[in-house]
Image (cartoon, rainbow, N blue to C red):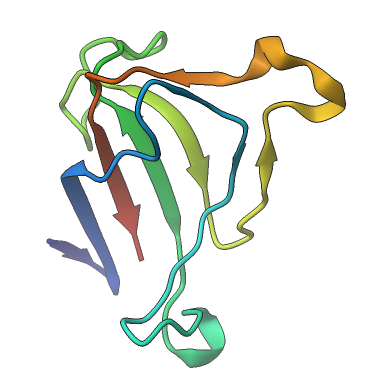
Length: 112
């Protein structure tokens, strides 16, 4: 954990994959306490940002990672406290779906 002016940064390596050998159609960030209640500014936490990474693919912009995350992985989803949903098949465009291969693993970087 890295703390900086009240912020804490976490990198969860090899977290559970959203699915195996599948197409992801919809994503939304969330932050919960251990008891299942939503964590937000009114009760003590702020989801500054979350980035999900596919370690089985290379990032098009930063193929060798970057300063805060020096690993080669494809950033496939990012969100903040607004927690906006991402609909990848909006209006039926199936070519926009995200393919998640069976051998890939998922890392998650979180700043709160």
